[in-house]
Image: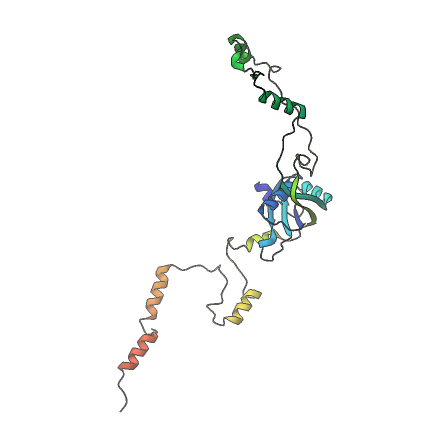
Length: 255
């Protein structure tokens, strides 16, 4: 995983234009499952809540370059998505009718299914001690699943279904710049001649308030408190507005 993060994302990142846009988180999750059939997905993000919002666009980063290439070769992808209806188990009509008739007729005895406990102890012992490979029943082979098709697409009717279309395009943006400029990743650093620094200097002309260079070393609290004490004592002491007002009131009035 760490090696895939270090590798370049130029060939693995793909922008998806989804029409119509996903209405909720459940539809976004189903679209992610559809994309995961082409390969392992490391990053999936809907740009609806991005700074430059794009409600119809999503960003996908695959683990392998070949998976991203195969996914773009299949585009545009059209599929139908909706809520699955109730699933009914198929039963034989004749068997259902006979079962209902037997249940309603009191003269027909109830058939009891034999269990393993009804067998003799010797048969149970032979079955429990049998460890041969041919004695263990194998499950039936699973039928192959056609890509981009649900396994129960025919048995489960879709309710309120809609057609979706995905158009792909390679992502050319530099993701390292996005990570560095994130709100919770490091600090925002800028050169003195940067546009952000000049804009702040024009709005805030005071030199100490428009600094956005956070690379400056921080001073200890004891040094800051000592500097504040020096401001109120010594030859260069500065008086507060309250002290100036009190001195004005105590000063003798001119005759």
